[in-house]
Length: 313
Image (cartoon, rainbow, N blue to C red; front, top):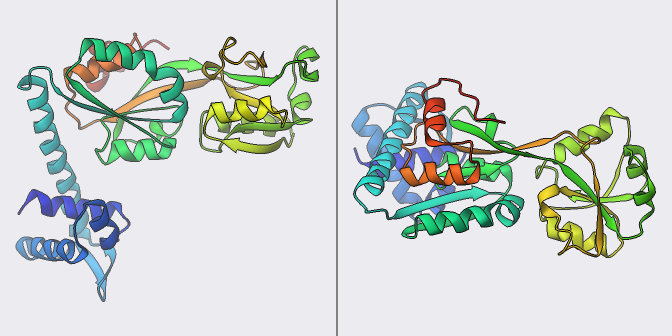
């Protein structure tokens, strides 16, 4: 039995039983993956995947047990490397962070700057995607930490901790009629074309729920994953924007006006997540505390032990 065989096994299961997709993800050949899985089945004396011709169609009962064990073994193999990085590499190593565009653009720059000053030998990799992609990257081990507002708290495999809360802002061109609406109402907003986030990004679900609760159907004429894109089109007069408050800078965005919307939309919580079975390195604890000062190492470790300490939100 080889670790590579276990990697093939788990990757095939994660790719919906597609051997070709697994081979592509692992930069190897489809026949090679099939051969190694067959050799592992022969060695174990069990059938892991049910087949229809050459296609894999289901995971067998013993296969589910083998897959669970394979995931644990691969997780521990990753942890051994992480232990080495933390204790034997003299402060070197790598940290992969998966996050959304808004967090990468507006929240993380000062955090990254302070982290690099504290750990100059650590190689950083930041990958951006949707909240579900962020979760997938943490789940499959290609990212160490995930930072997002949505999705992360839905995975039992993760320990997910709240970092900070934030609200939405309404942004308009200067002189827009909505600026005279005091207080701003959802009904008034619904009377204008709206430009806001894609359906799975940056608290969009809370925006939608607010209108639904008031039986209003907003005219969302343009969506984007990038706050700067939203502000650009608002500046062109194409509509009224709804963005995350951290994405608005009065000096940089001097052609726009902002209207507080805490009374219109629920607040949002950005979270950081990592796999429960991951061995955490010292610099990862440092990064999380830089991101959210209440997330000290003792607080995180107590939460890992299941002591239920409230990290302060």
